[in-house]
Length: 95
Image 1 (cartoon, rainbow, N blue to C red):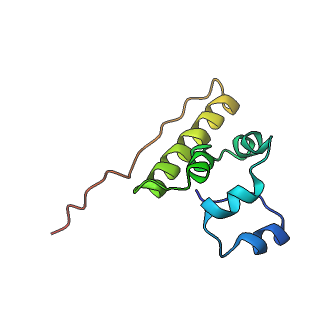
Image 2 (image 1 turned 45 degrees about the vertical axis):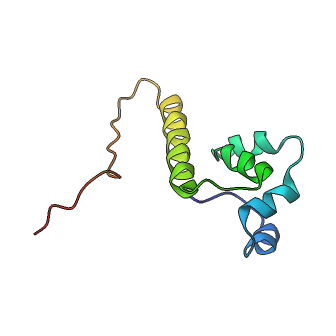
């Protein structure tokens, strides 16, 4: 869920930086549109602007991205039924 389409140069430039920091460098008009087109939750941009990540930021980010991906699939597969199984809350019952 942590994939975005970047050029090799951009990827190398940001590779060791905190997302809160590198997003500030790209925070210009139109960035939210780009994030949406890549199915990336805009909450990460809000966190960058506020200079703070919530304690469970990765969980929130992944859940929001999964929901964006599922919505995109529903739109593309209109009329085709599919089921989603959430394995995230599964408990291990091994002894």
